[in-house]
Image 1: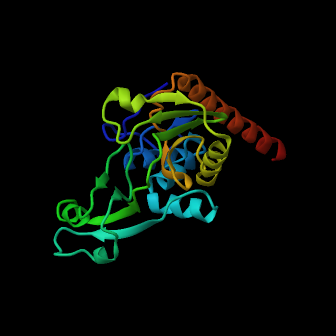
Image 2: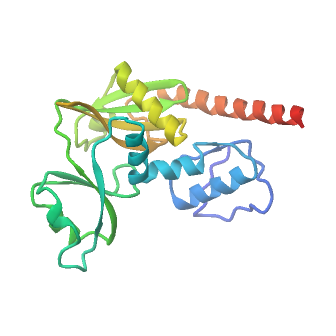
Image 3: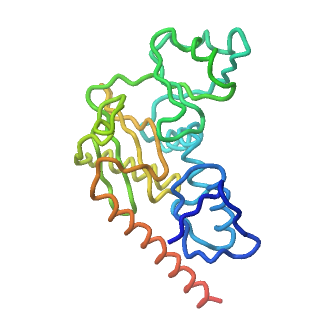
Length: 249
């Protein structure tokens, strides 16, 4: 196994890398580009660069899941710019409470929970760019984080927001069948094999509010073995496909 940090070293890619498989744990642009080049040379990846990028684009995956009639709350795009006295469209938004997310982000980065009247104040201090606005869903209990690694699926309940490591680990729980089905459908739509979904339970039912490619799997001590199994399955599937191509050829 070789640990690669593409931001810290030169990696020769003008010929096929001597890698059997790439595990794309980081979602940084450099890591995704490196994986994309490896895939172009025929090296399989878990998860693929395109799928990882899609999972990072909150507007894109929200649209895909909504089109598939999965339980996704209404989200909208707004361009916030601190150089403007008032960003376009802010008058049309409810006073709050809102969840504001950077269009691309992970691990809690680029996420703000706003009280009533907080949107304009936030718009005056954050970098200019596209942001996703979502009504904060009324919660009737703790949040549910669902982790998937190949055929394995596990859940963790935890409070929102979770600040300490203990709070982030939460409590391991069983996942209701209807939610497990929706989460697996979401992963299939995005082309992910190792991923997580954040689910909120409200008065009207369950809502998928976030998708993460290769999350930290905190709170599930049975996850490492499942991840190893998912990686092995991906490698074996690639080998089987390569063998079939050779036979047909």
